[in-house]
Length: 167
Image 1 (cartoon, rainbow, N blue to C red):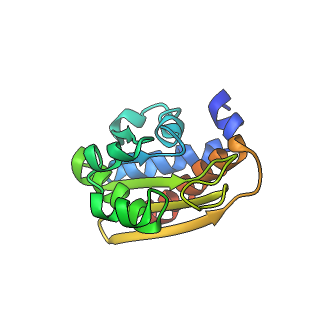
Image 2: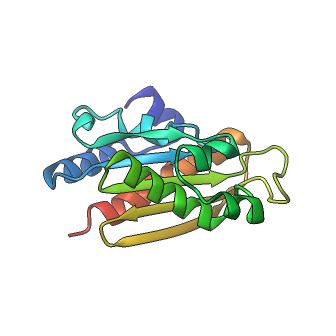
């Protein structure tokens, strides 16, 4: 097991199967990550051969980079803040479109310890955009910053595995 997979509590076999399935179908993935700051892309690339699948990604920790790099609507950000399900969807779509990938994953949330724009720590929105449309999931994680971020990475991998390996 890689030190990163171990630190995040990821099932390395699931990662290998996911990358293999996407590679076999000629599909690719890109990320736009806020609270995880690139951990999803880093986790996916622990798998040998992942360069055939992972196109790239954006670390969009700052709000202005969410629209500047990933193409999130600035009016949405101004109206609802950065931690919003629709922001996660637009992050995923932006990552997919701007990186020329089959799949896009977008994550935004509050790792803590303090609330952000009235949103409680542990609140995470994950968007996934693919050939069959877009979905969003919201999770609430109890724990410290590491636990929130690790759970977010695991959920992102699970969402891609559910969507990206379905026939």
